[in-house]
Image (tube, rainbow, N blue to C red):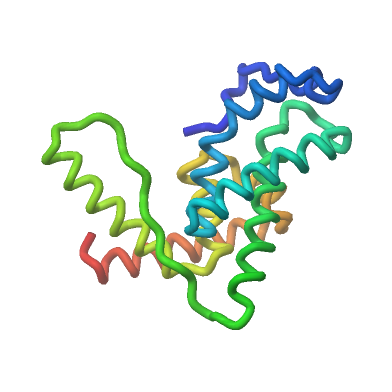
Length: 183
C-alpha cells in the first residue's frame, strides 16, 4: 500500500496558507496509515492516537520548513517516527525488551479464512515484536507503507546504508523467528 500515489495531488500549498479544509483533506488522507504505523511501534491505542494528533499539530506548526510539497507524506511519517522514538525511550529507559502487538482487522473474507488470516497476522506481528524497534520500523515502512529506502532514510533520519543494513538484518531475523514459530 503506497501512502500517496505519485499522481495524487494533495493540498499542501493551501495547508501552508492556513486553509482548514486543506488540513482536513490531509488529515483524512494520512490519519489511518499514520495510526497503523505508530501503533505497531508503541503498541498502545491511546498513545498512538495522541502521537498522531501531536504529529499533525507539529506539521501545522512547522509546515513552512517543508521544502518539497510532494514529500509531505514522508515528512509527516518522519515527524511521527521521531515522536514514537521519544515515547519508546520515555517508557523503556530501563527495559531491554519491547511490548507485544496485534494486527488490525483484515478485509472481507469467508469467516473461516478470516479467522485463519487473523491468527497468522497476529502471530506474524508477534514475531515482529521480537525485533529491535529500528528494524521493525524499517520493515513496516518498507513493506506495509511501501516507502522507498531513500524515503525511509529521510523519515528515520538514518543514513541510506544504515536503512539498507537494518532492512537486510531485519529480514534475516524475521525469517529466523518465523521459521522457529512455523508460520
